[in-house]
Image 1 (cartoon, rainbow over the protein chains, first blue to last red):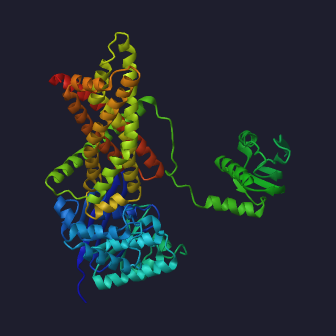
Image 2: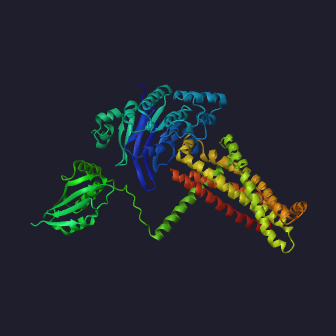
Image 3: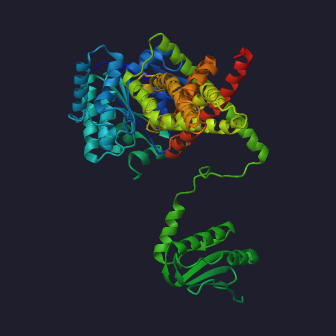
Length: 251
Length: 387
């Protein structure tokens, strides 16, 4: 068994909006191949933490360390290099509404590769097929359902075969079957692409099905109160908020 | 201990409260129909009674055996009564309430009120409001300067050939802001030329100097009116469209998605829009100038009986060419301002539908304002240079 290698480290992270502190003292490591869950009750700041990790919001202090170096302390070239290696699936897909699905996926391919248009279109079709949307290449986002938009968003996030994929509430709005299929897809991608996943979610079924490591963000104390495999946390954790979360309010 | 029943005059004929004071126990007897379509009795008598008997009272109880029908109105009243009792330090017995009501009241009380979640809108004192406005506008100045800086950088990248945007976007924007605007620009410029000529004609006719109508319309249209009219039309038409489009993208997280894909939103979205307007505005301005002169021509020929050829040659000879170039400079500047205003407001948009509407409105207002201010500056500048 190979020793885990970190691919994203967070050190002493503090996040605030002006004077209002949202989260403090965040310290955790995400290893390669992890399916890392960021979980917590509503309003605990999970999505804000995600925005800091992917470079949309600057933390008030602390470091976000990728393999290429610190994101927020580096120069623009390093940030561009990091962005090149990550993919983000936003909560509603965030597809570009003026472009078809194929054009959405082709955009990063056109920008970062020297492939011919025909090859790009083939790869786009492949990515769409992987998420179960084969045949929908020329549809616009307004013409497909919310769940399909999410899957198309995932296809776009995967376009450049990123090292780390970030998911913002992937199962929100999905029916149980689609949710399960998405879990399967995540595990499949992890095994075949050797990608690392960071998932912000509060869907317990997914958390236990796919999570290999997790942190729990507590609304009241505004910091992380647990770090570890979700199943182990369920067995061993004693903090009341965490237990209530993991047992769906039964304890 | 004497019981002193105190009647609270019923405000309606279908519900009645009788508050009987039994020494240490206050019993609230409720009777009749307590539903949404019957008015709720006042809390004041209860409150007054509580304060007047306060020292001796230890508990409050309900007797709802006479209530025939109840709904949320009833619950509302009981909740308020409970709150008053708890505030006065009394124990409370909900046993006399109908069973469903008691459990609902329990449920409402279960999750304690989150402190600090309620928003208090107090009217701030006048000076404090001025202060907040000043601080707010400093912050928005900062954002604006940052935006202008980003756009300048993007222009630099464009000149070096490294700007990243889609040329298909640029072509459709050119069509949208150029060709599609021709009908409305034609109509308005024609009418403006007509009006200018008409107003001038009335005065000049008295001196027999009608021919100078051609000069007036020519200079006015070429130097400022063509550019300003086009600018205002495009501000309302295209500036608003840019703000709405970018604002909606902001709401949908599309601009965030662009950033995380490694694209610069300013290069990808703002630059093509600015380019399209900078290319199209001068052309539209020339077209507006021509339509304005045509409007003047119509008045001159049909109302003032000036010979058509004479009108045209008078225009050609009496209007200095410098005015034409000044008009073009105006319209190029206006194009930049409209694009900047529209895109800036769009990208600064909040994350709701009403925010998009607000962004659109402020974009148009900002565009028009900056057009007029720019005209003033250019005019003063021309004075300086001697044009």
